[in-house]
Length: 222
Image 1: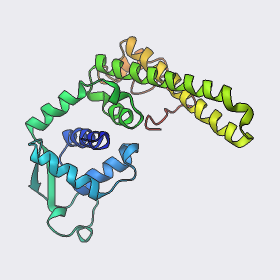
Image 2 (image 1 turned 90 degrees about the vertical axis):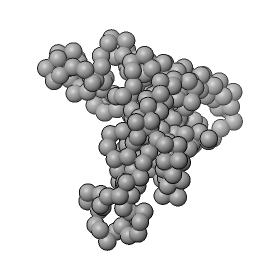
Image 3 (image 1 turned 135 degrees about the horizontal axis):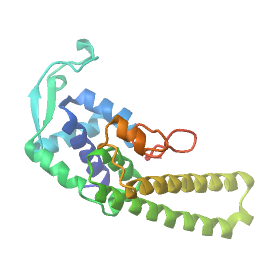
């Protein structure tokens, strides 16, 4: 299995754990909720779905058109199929959530793993966050070394581009530091009710996560 297909399978299982979906609705959620899938086609999604069905992790059921989709926009048998997670599929997804190795730290996979942190145990979240930070710190050190060696030979625009890349990595490292600090402090965005959350979150952020500079958080897929 390629890394790309493994990430897609993980995302599909995670979204279908929330509720059954048509292929159209599932593709829309992948496009809008998970940035790494902003540009992919049904030609990629449907083989993945068929493979998950063959493994016994999904079942196909007959249903109507998804909410907000005109009936005329969906024709043929494929448009009527609803994909539902099986008990085996749920167990498989929960087993995948425990993985915290190097693949979970990489650019493409990290954003998808982070999207499902609400379903992930705190110790696994910590390992993934610390692994991601370590990976980015290594990358940042290489970028600084490369820039120090070549800056005299670079024109102004290339130099500015490299600085921009370094600043992006530095910004994500700071963001990860804030998340790791929050995890170590024992905050869990799923646990406290509104009153306790307001008391325990100095920033006043509704989900218990630290606010990024400017009041927003960076897209982890960037």
